Length: 343
Ligand SMILES: [Zn+2]
Image 1: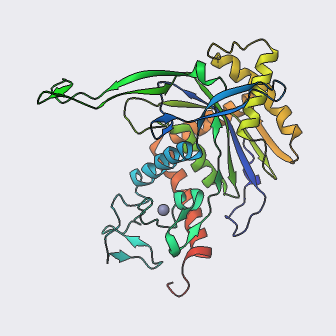
Image 2 (image 1 turned 30 degrees about the vertical axis):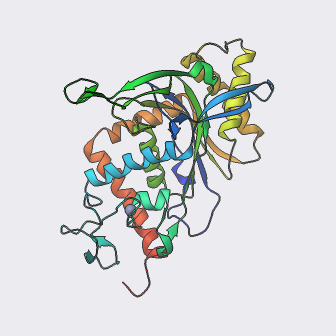
Image 3 (image 1 turned 60 degrees about the vertical axis):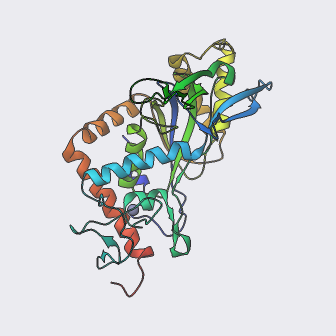
């Protein structure tokens, strides 16, 4: 089981050296688009650490990973009545005794990137910035992820048609310009990744973990492409930061190459990569200069995730989990964010 005693009982005001790392492989289940300005993001890096030839990899920027996960959590907070579904009013509006904007039902209004409520599990875990009205640093760290396989074997260019309502591609005699060719990430492309959660309480850590387990849609916000599965490989509780996504990717590449499980022209078999990553992570953790309190993996991790899934698949269990997270975030707000004198 996960050692909940490791987590602080309240989120501390200053860094306290409690790092919970979620180590995972992200796998595309369909054609995904991770792009800015119409092109897939790529990086030219060394293939491995031992194998130092250069390789062009698809990159998945930090925000492409965390934003969908945040939004899933926020959806749940609204679904279970912990924050309002309303937008922040232009001006006026009611506030509660803490100075938090509320709707007519008395629920806090948390308007993403417009007016953060500064007290919900999302605001406290992932942070916010509201111009000069205050900011809170994110306690969930992530970094650019790199495809395990080369760009050439991991993408496909195809045309996206956007027909008119009648199903035709022309209107009033003019052919739509809504046809364009785009590079898509192939299904079953793997992105090794580490998500680091710093100094959050156990309920807030579970809130973040649940978001990672539930989020399916990444990349360009279309409804038909971009689904992914996050395979959790381990949870490491430590007193510092561990290996980077790029190092993890390169060492996994080396490990697969050493087992002759790599053909640069072919996609990498998912089960082979998962197994190789499970073998490799304990070695990587040992090479890091951190004290690991617990590394939860294998059958123990499977048991923990099954138990956690049992809770979150039940409305009552889900509500309890969110309420516990909301209590901890509200406590932090009252202690360190709420303006004095507004009590
Ligand atoms: Zn909020």
